[in-house]
Image (cartoon, chains in turn yellow, blue):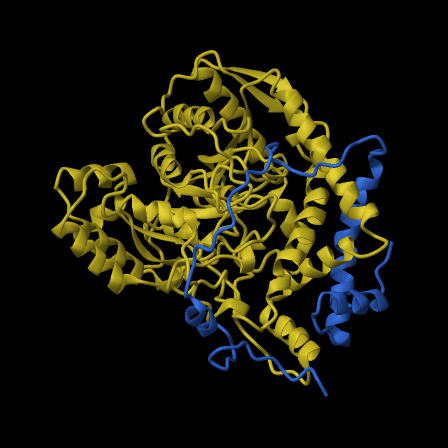
Length: 485
Length: 95
């Protein structure tokens, strides 16, 4: 059984289609591994019993034409799953059972996959370390007491630790790419409008996107192909011709022009990150592509802009949690008192902090100074990318300014936590696709990632570049199974 | 710029989050350090910049206004913290 969990999604699909493995074999193996991995705290809710039933049903009447035939999969607990508790990592949704299914997960089940359970994440996806979850922090499979990153920390931990073959996360400012980078896996944040937001617990609606997380680029392409769809139920979903991303995947990137933005060389960046970036540039050249120095002059304003726009949208989105229609309710002396106590007891500290920031920047007298200003700067940041893409096909940067940090290391300093997302946030602000691939290790043996940013709707191109680089990098994740007794 | 306790209490009222003295002080400290960081935006001149209002430059599609989820009242009510079978229940609002 133990070798089953080591297989990639592509291998598992092939082995199920060739009848070398049954869905029950595969599902059992991942359940077994997940049960032995409680110490990682990757799951909030498991659905193992019903997963096994579904696997048996699949094997009785298999449909091998599906893209994910009988493949078990755990997903981030930010996706609403019909009749299965969906918490968003929050006490306020601790008992919430959706009556509907998110479009993205629906697409996955329609292709034959089977839900294993719901994965831990930062509360309402607000965090970069998975330490803000009401259900406790997640351990990284890389090392004990190391954060897996966030907010899709449970997702990253589950893929790197082989508790699920692939998974989906969400990315508002780096929540797929940063944890992917911290745990040595691949994570894609698609173009805004590529994957439906219907049924995803909302954080910041103009930035949120769902995306795949996987052991390698090919698996990532296959899962992306399944989840990306036009959806009339999401008014910002975009009706464009989607590729067969896995079929059209090629490592031929000869002649492609890759931009290297000088502004991503930030003060205090460890030499290891700079060296990794240089190595990445060499890999690009080895693949027959060309690198070009470019400038994205407003990069340093991206993070302050994000910390106005994202909390502003969050404060509006989270106004719905009032203790009336669903979720947690605290006792109050009157209606207003009930609202105030419910929200004070139901939300954690980071979520309350962001609601407060958002409420402040949208409040009378401050709107122009903060929110309007931020939307103007956001335009400048988008213009920078538009300008750059006149000269280049894609952009290469480090994924994060450092490797993973220890649990508790940054919890007392919100700004230092926010700085983690310095290279990923601009991509969300401009609505572009970005992929993080593992590219090396630091001196402690922790994984480091490189990010490839594409033009809007250019997922195929960045997947191809990632695929070509992956072959040259030949990264091996160092998983010691430290958590298994 | 400095956000004082009075402002924190005002925002917390708007946000419908109760704060006591201790929490208000902690929030004031956190928000001040975050806003110090945000103030960097003032370095940029943006008088002639159009604000970004939509990241996806498409026109919204129209669809017919049809009810698709029918007869789900029971399921919806089931999630409420306190219900009276047919209604959501809240603390008394009329004296």
